[in-house]
Image (cartoon, rainbow, N blue to C red; front, top):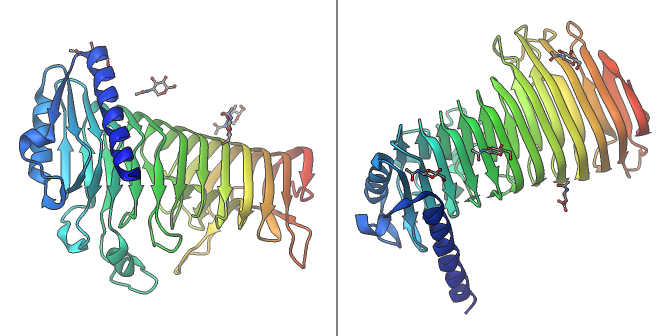
Length: 394
Ligand SMILES: *[C@@H]1O[C@H](CO)[C@@H](O)[C@H](O)[C@H]1NC(C)=O
Ligand SMILES: *[C@@H]1O[C@H](CO)[C@@H](O)[C@H](O)[C@H]1NC(C)=O
Ligand SMILES: *[C@@H]1O[C@H](CO)[C@@H](O)[C@H](O)[C@H]1NC(C)=O
Ligand SMILES: *[C@@H]1O[C@H](CO)[C@@H](O)[C@H](O)[C@H]1NC(C)=O
């Protein structure tokens, strides 16, 4: 009964989405069913999807690939531009990846490349990662294979990704590389807390990325921002389980820069870390600056505020002070509970002390036998203002 009802709603939603886009932009629909897709959850639909994409992409107007409700097995697919007009992909159903990791010759399952004016909306992407996770734990398996990211956007510009769910990715859920002006709304990401390397959204070499109204629970970072990333705005995101929202790790190579990140009005639940900046203790040059973490609730978080310039998840680490300059970092109105006594860690580099770090209105509580919470700083220049609990170390 309830699944019939759900199906009905999905149909209605799809019809409305198609209608709205059709009226707005004179869209031509390319329904995968007209390209022999079979919604039985087992037949490989890669060719049907690729043909529908090709025609939508070559349509000199606004083309839209439609995947009606149902369950579709899809092998590794690459949706490539440039296209002649804008392209939409409307997914009404469930896409399933092959469970066997050896079926993938590339580093992604679903890949969009070189597309301008792309919209991806709806759908659940099931990476079927359970088999792969056993292989992906590099701490137990030194020969760990390259596993595919669920959905990867390379050199995609002016895009909107909306109401997309990703479950049980084999590796990262969503990766953006070389992208510009991408908005992501109502994204749902989920994988078990112990699934290795399942970052939620990983962003590298991209500018103008906005993520809002999304829920991410996974085995690695909820969101990670890496080298070459600028101007990222994250708001109304709930993160947990996972390793928090991270900038880095940076500083393994020269020029690992990240500049301009705002994380606002977010909640962290039971994550190992909250808002995190991490650089390797290696002599590479770079800058990480202009970050604001504001209006954030921490619910039983391991390291709610952590800036670590001696990051070393596994040896060998060259134990030299980091030469990556961190500056202009504001933590404002962050409250809730810490699972560790040290609720605030600002461990900067002895060679390049952090500049202009501001702690403003911090209220983090720790209820262990060795309470209260403390803050730990090294090589930090900046100031603390407003309410401070734990007592500030700047
Ligand atoms: C495509 O859609 C956009 C708005 O979504 C509209 O401005 C544009 O005119 C449309 N292009 C064509 C060729 O229909
Ligand atoms: C993304 O959102 C911003 C701010 O709301 C808006 O200015 C921009 O046009 C949007 N971009 C796309 C591709 O939808
Ligand atoms: C902040 O988040 C809460 C809960 O997630 C939401 O109800 C509220 O509208 C958000 N505030 C703003 C300014 O977006
Ligand atoms: C840090 O902020 C100051 C004041 O807003 C600004 O002048 C400076 O350029 C910023 N530093 C970096 C590295 O962007």
